[in-house]
Length: 246
Image (cartoon, rainbow, N blue to C red; front, side, top):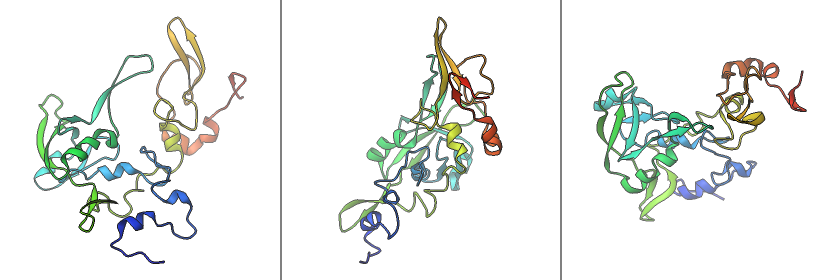
């Protein structure tokens, strides 16, 4: 069996001898923040010509040419589609603004404006009171176009993801995802809260990564990545019979 280099679709579906099924894009465990085999968020980083975005938020990592001034700013909308939204805390209070995953924020942009110039709004954190700057940037096509097929293929365009970039932001070691992934975002490998009670003041509980079990509140994890890297076996505890193991 041989694969011609020009047959990009066949390359995508080729399973090399000895590799498990999860090495194929169609069956890989690849949730986008990030996955286990590859981090698909990286495909969106170079979607707009002239700038490179952070894989998880609208921060402009670098920019080139006439757009160099945009480095260090935040992209908050593309073609009038917002890239961030207001979020609510578990108790319903306002929790600030959070960037959406690129596949949610920019899917319609790709579908409607591929190859076109679109207005992009940028926020400068160094001058928070300044007006947003609107810059027109071209949307790169996401997939390689086939002359034979007369349209896009399933292969990702090289301008969007260079070799190695789909895996460059995978979590290593495992403590990254353990600290960041919670069930209020997607199914995680640990609880968010334990010892949960319903009180007159509302729902309270112990955060799984809290330093102390009192008071019971809803709060962000207190244990840092570095602490989990260095001493997870002493910091992470089990709940047995409603209490921490001694």
